[in-house]
Length: 429
Image (cartoon, rainbow, N blue to C red):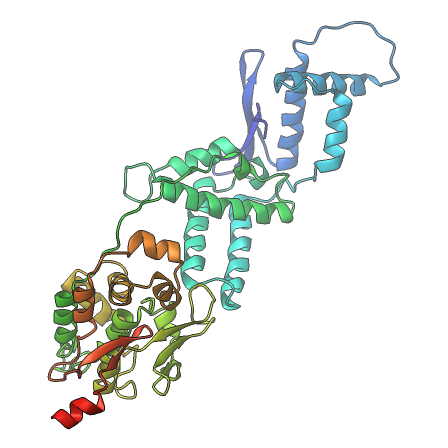
C-alpha cells in the first residue's frame, strides 16, 4: 500500500469546531488546509497529489486524442509508477486495477467499524462459535485499536501506523511486546481488516504487509507435583471450607473443593471452571458402571470426544465426597479457587500436567496418555515423557482420602485393578 504524501486527519480547532485537515509538502512549502467535510478534503488531497507528480514532468509536443485534463492525469499516473519503482506500463496498471480493485468506503471511521465488528463477535459468542476467552481477547484488542486510532478513516490506516501501534508498550509496561504477543495481536487485527474488506471499508488488508515473526518453540518440561505434594494438597482440601463471613458462617463446608481438584488432578480435566472442560462436565459424564469419565465434544477444548479411565483412588475420592452433596463447581467457586491458588502457589495447569506425567510414568504408554488427556503424542513426548518414575507414579495413584486404604493393586490395560488371589493361595492360607 503506497504511502500518501498528503494526509487527511480529523482535527479540532481551538474554537472546538471539528474539521478535516489536509497536510503535506509541495514545492518545499508546508501545506495545511482545513475543510468542514471529508469530501472537500479528499478533493484537495487529490489535486495536491497531481500537482506534486506533475512538478518534474518534462513537457513535449505530441499529437493525442486526450483532453488536456486526461493528458495531465496520464502523466501523473506514469509518474506514480516511476515513484513506486515499477517498470510496468500504464495500460498494465489500468488492467490490474480493473481486475482487482474494489472501491473502499471513505467515510467509515475506525471507531465505528470496531463497534460493528465487536457486535458480530458477540453474536458468534452467543451462538457458541467463540469461547468467552476468545471473545474477551478480541474485545480488548478492538478497544485498544479504537482508542489509538480514534476518528481515523479505516481505509487510510497505513501498515507503518499499525507497526507503531503493535510496538507500543502495553498497559503500564515500558517493554516492547514479545514476539508471541505481537503475532497474536497481529492476527486479531488481520481478521478485523478482513472483515472491513468484506464490508468495502478498505480496498485491501494492510496487515498482510506486516511481518509475522517465527517463534522458537520451547522444549521445557511441564511443572508438576510430586506424589508427596499431591497427597498433602488433597488431604489439606478435606478440611478446607474457605474463609469466614461477617456473620460467622463459612464460604463452604469442609471438603467442598475436593471433587473439583480431584477430577483435575486424577483425571486431567482442563480446569477452567468458567468456560473450560470442568465447567461443562456433568455428573452423568462420570460412569461408575464402566469406570470411565466421558468428555463429550461440546465439553472438550478441541471438540473431540475422549474417554478418561477413573482409577480406583479417584473413585474413592468421589465416594467419600459424592457429587450430590459436593458439586464439582460449588457456591463461591471463584473466591475459593483464588484463595487456594494463592495459598498453595499453584502454577497454571499444574494438576493436569501432574496427571499426564503420572499416567505416562505408571503405564509407560504415550499413546494412552495422549488419548486420555486430549493432547498429541508429540506434545506428550516433548513435555511429559520420563518426568516420573514408575515408583513415584504408583505412589501418586495410591493417594486416597484420610482414613481410607486401597487393597493390593496390579496394572491391567492402563488401569489399576485389585489383585485377584489364586485359588491355591487361598487354600494355603
